Amino acid sequence: MKQIVIIPTYNEKENIEKMIRAVRALDIDFHILVIDDGSPDGTAAIVKNLQNEFADSLFIVERQGKQGLGTAYITGFKWSVEHQYDFIFEMDADFSHNPNDLPRLYKACAENGADLAIGSRYCNGISVINWPIGRVIMSYYASMYVRMVLGMKVYDTTAGFKCYRRKVLETIDFSRIKMRGYGFQIEMKYNAYKLGFKIEEVPIIFIDRTEGTSKMSSGIFGEAFWGVIKLKFRTIKPVKS
Image 1 (cartoon, helix red, strand yellow):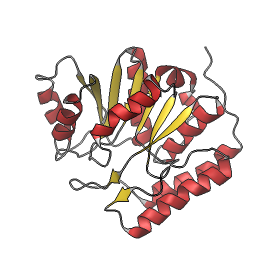
Image 2 (spheres, rainbow, N blue to C red):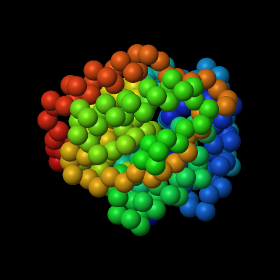
Image 3 (cartoon, rainbow, N blue to C red):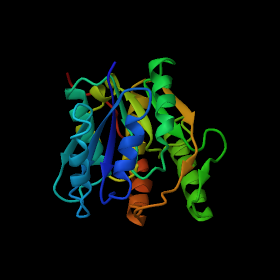
């Protein structure tokens, strides 16, 4: 079995080396693919320097300009499927996702039979640290809104800490994925749900970043709000073989 963690980056020089070392120190052999959107702070240079140390397990794709979270992950998904990875993970570079939880997501898929495992902030109460209360409320009720509109039985619909079996990403038609910000996370889960894949939520504790700058904006929330309504009326079909 081969497993890879996709980490999108934009100006993450404070975090990226620590994250790479933390993932590579785990007992499971997780490879890492960094998708960097032209970070002006030198994030990509740090990764390329570390490739001397992790030559067979650390990879980078450099893109020109800030193209968005969704397109970064789709780029990573296509690369990972092409390179025949069995389990493909998403996570942030800023340690809001604890790398020590990666084996728990892996177990949900590799041992429990899930096709998509979600690191969930809300499946066991609310497990968020260092967020302002307003942001916690907004995030929690955003997930509730998505469940009501789409009928998807997932508590943390906007979660970005996930593990996919390769067959899920081979089945989803990326050309029909329209949202590019955090709404992308909702759209990918909904596609997996409508295509009949088994989804399991794994409770995690989410800790807001302590270094670097958040990429959240009001436009991201607006895209997700209206995008969910459009998604409700869209036909979900598997990719054409």
